[in-house]
Image 1 (cartoon, one colour):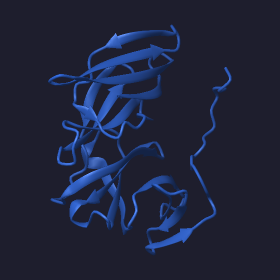
Image 2 (image 1 turned 90 degrees about the horizontal axis):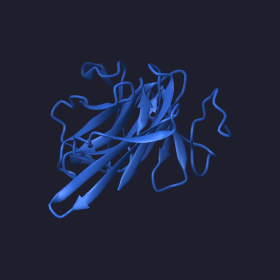
Image 3 (image 1 turned 180 degrees about the vertical axis):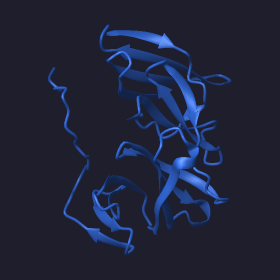
Image 4 (image 1 turned 135 degrees about the vertical axis):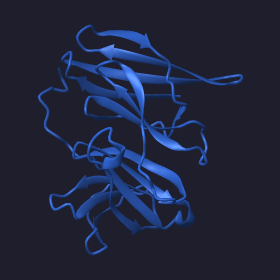
Length: 212
């Protein structure tokens, strides 16, 4: 299995690509981590991935000079979840703690993403797995106490926040296993369908040409 992340190291003024390989062996798993630096165009191997398995094998999310993945010690629903962060400056891993859910029986973190330059997670309550969905955002990177719950709503479908509108009350949601999306108004608790189809992505301006 393989996953990757891409980001900018402001200390050395370099872009870096990080690739994590997970290999199955007879008594478990082992890992390999490689880093490609833009200035040298050379790959190098660094320490093994230290924190168990990466769930969902989504690409890493870049924020605050780090790349972040959702991880667990064991590859099952009962294993505690956490965020693994790779610091692009010193090329080392650390663990980022998830919010304190106040005794809620959390069983599924479906998404780790970046919204407005902040880490964001979504999860389902095990007792209401097909109903209650929560969205949390870390307003100060690395500070566990800065996790803030943005809203909770009921939905029969898994979802992924794509974009927060300027008033912070409305969020564009992409529903998994479907080409449909919807705008959720957290103030009034309502959904509004739209005409967007297929894959939704938010584009940002860049000084780097993709053809360079």
